[in-house]
Image 1 (cartoon, rainbow, N blue to C red):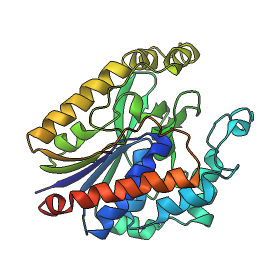
Image 2: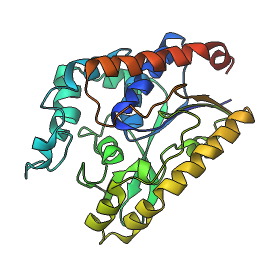
Image 3: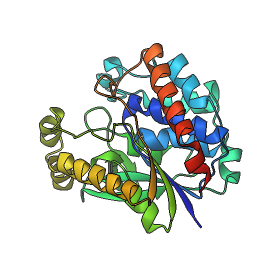
Image 4: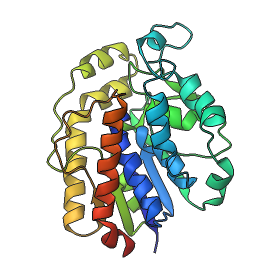
Length: 281
């Protein structure tokens, strides 16, 4: 039996996931494979290193810090990213709230991040390892169009994995996971509408035909994946952890501590509701 854990992105909405992951740690859940995209993989590494509370601490203490994110970083010609990559993926994990690389390596869990190759417009899965000292794979998976710059890995340019695979459960199934927990950051009834920024993104990255095509079909693809996931839940092939309330007020760039805590608490409580079912895995 092989157990998988799949994590959707969603930027600050991912604090629902952070709460859910801490609850999984508390009930003793272990995964053989973790597959995540965007904020999902960024939060997932702390689960693998068994650092309960680390994600919430980052959210409460630093998300509202001017060093973390803001337009001042986006218009800075030396950064050109809404999220301050040097701070978020450098100073934070290396100094302020250290990431336990040794525990991560000893976990025995295979960790994969979904990335979008902006030339081909296809999803690729890259391993996340402690050898990647700049967290390039994780940064690439989080690199939202406009909000980040493309990340070069092995001579190719990559951006947000959520563009091409927002909920990468298919990869877990392909890897042979017969027992899989999937955590998403939108309610089961959610239907994605076309995002206003897609047209701007398509124009800005127009020289990358693959990325442009992926952006044009992203809304339809997301809804297809979401529907497929609900069918797998009905068939008992996965355990789905999702908010059980309207998430329309959960902003992608949310930074208010009280809202971060609220999303975390809901995620934690949701896993506890499914505790017995999860432990049967």
